[in-house]
Length: 312
Length: 265
Image 1 (cartoon, each protein chain N blue to C red):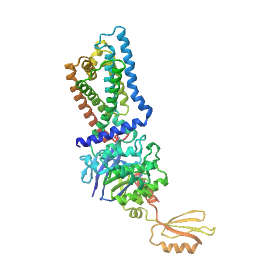
Image 2 (image 1 turned 135 degrees about the vertical axis):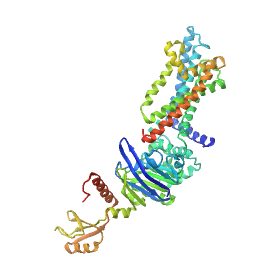
Image 3 (image 1 turned 90 degrees about the vertical axis):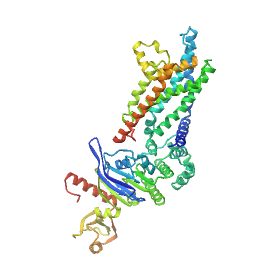
Image 4 (image 1 turned 45 degrees about the horizontal axis):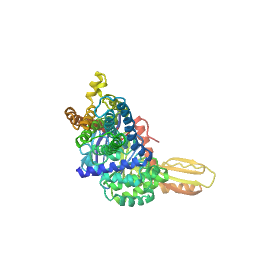
């Protein structure tokens, strides 16, 4: 295991930010930390990157303890966040030249142009001042800065925060491509479920400083949200009703219907039943998205902590 | 980290800082003109007083004033570069990237401060040239007197490091220390001899290393030697200042790491 987090605790002014979290990450794995605001994602990443001391517990990165050997840890780790900035009055070349000297990388210019091109930053972009960069361009340059430094472990703390949906999607596709090629161990935190589902091999869901679930995205979705959904449009104006113990509930909007099934075991049988009951123009079977699973899971956890009933 | 590695990092900061200064063209020109204007104003004032009978200061009052402001300017730049080193990076949002280097944080902080030393040097040379060429004030600056000036600079950057450390935890404290620092102009004899101050104020003067820096520089340039007291006080003050600065910085960084205040501004 290249990352070992054991029983990590952190409190800020009486508020428990992390309440004994533990997880391990293998070399080359992309591990996601998912959770609502204030769940403890950024606190975890800050401790792992030596920017914050834990109250209790240990974190080992590549065999080095983050408290005892922070310099050794920083040799292995780099972190990218949406808050990262550059010197606005300097050009991209000047900025990267400065950071490369700090990282003691001599062939930075060639690397910068290569990585820049892969990420869609042309030479003329690199000659511009950072003050003229959009948020998306700045995040691309941030990734270039990291790729030049070339640490084996990378923490991505909500890297697409503040990007518009199109730029965000493009950026996460780039991240995926880079991660596959560079074989880095990555810890990824995000609110964007698409990114997490696309990029991460395993996910831990954090809520109120505790890990409430860990697993592969698909398995996690099934475990948290085993429901399947049959979606269809009827051709007539008649209503639609279906009484079956496999059906959880039905939602409708005009002549568009969504039948939520408790699981996927009798799906074909129920489709036949629907077709016999009404005339259907189109029909599809859907799995819940990770976002739906995440919302359900978070609501359940919140409900549990308040001592109430679970969702639905 | 070896010396070569540190010099590479230092060079990175020097290049970055001059590129940044040059990017603000008018500010850059102002930065070069400001010391010239300053030395000219006080040179004329000193000469006026000398023409009216003088004050009995060795080499005339104009020499007294010019040495005072050259030394003060040198120390002032050192103070602001060291005390604002972390705060400036936090403000821009680049501190995290500098902190994430696999070195002790004091390496980039020292490099930033030493990069500011190049500005002190440029200003020093400018003022020296103007004093000599425009006002005919002969500033016989020798290697020992220059080394003495560097010691004075070291004594104040220790104070700057301490403030930089405290400012990580208490953001507004910088303003308080800036006022204290500028009050040194009153106590340390930048523009007049400390002897003209009330007795009680002179006790404070004697407790501030800058007083010895100014008196040592004046005697060194006017008479060619550094008084023994000043020669003794400056290295001790420099070492104590640095030690206090580094210890304060270390303690504040540790507290900031515990409280999560390192990245924030």
